[in-house]
Amino acid sequence: MAAADSLRPIAAAELAERRRTVAAHLADRGLQAAVLSDPANVRYLGGFALTQPWMSRTRPTVAVLDADGRLTVVASTAVALDDPPVDEVVPYTAPPEMPDAVADLLARRGLGGAPVATERGHEHRLGMTVAELEELERLHTDRFEDAGPSLWAARIVKSPAEIDRLRAAFAACDRIYARLFAGELRAGESERELARRISRMMLEEGADEPGWVMLTSGAGSYGRLLSTPRQRVIERGEMVWLDLAARVDGYWSDHSRAGIVGGEPTAEQVELQSWVVAATQAGIAAVRPGVALGEVAAAATLAGESVPGRVGHGVGLATTEPPDVVTGSDETAVPGMVFTIEPLAVREYGMFQAEAVLAVTDDGCELLTHAPEAISAVPG
Image 1 (cartoon, helix red, strand yellow):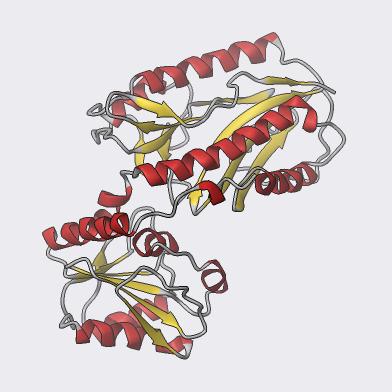
Image 2 (tube, one colour; image 1 turned 120 degrees about the vertical axis):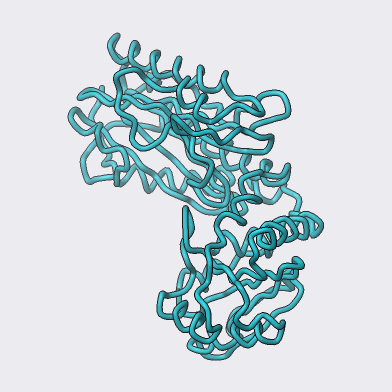
């Protein structure tokens, strides 16, 4: 099942509009260019991915966005760029030459020493070393400002093509949950064995890349929220809590579900899950254009439960990104935003969550997650 293969490529016109939007925001802040190396940002503006070079970290690939929306990619000659839809490609030979190549490009554009930005702040990571950034700033003769606000001004609102990719990623994991809870979740294997099997399922169900498999099982283990699968063997009658993320054409999924292996949830587990589901649905019901995200968070907050940071977060080219759905936020929902609503309760006997992900529409929202919210009774 090749979900990504059925998606239309993101059009050149959309890429050009993204660049104009970010460039205009940079100009409003008095910035004349952005030097970007976070793979998600380069992909967002450039329309291409370079998984292997970015994973190796040996040959940084950098995108330079001018204030007029022109995008230039500075890349190693060893990197195969298959006709990327950009305005220019500037090659360099040896990895230490990257800062010189970028500084020379800025100088050639009349931007030497001009106010320039890069990824410095919230929810961003550089695709170059600190030493490379410092050398680039030295050559440029000025410290770079934070490009983050200008990037998020564009990336926070997803296009129809982006939402198509998110639908496909979430649908892949929904199908995995259906398989697991129909009987492919079983006692007698370790958490790590299950995680490896789920990673294979992600590819089978149409993902381009497995993202993560977080899971935990067994009494006393349900506080392991960001949990690495263990060698622990899953036993019959236990709750297995899972949080899965897969990628389709660069876009992430992220949602959690739980099942009882070879048994039924207890009345206590059913009651607590029903409480969490009701809070989640209250948050969904609060979503509409113009509503403050703090109101959505307040609607979904479980009275008396501690909240680990926020009730929800954005999803896109990064698995967690703005906006933050947190009590007190006055940021408002706008059509095209995609975010989670995921109130959580943890007890000795289980982790209780019904994570929902939605896209804000003109008159409400579209739910992107469709796996059953109740704790599943898994046969076997």
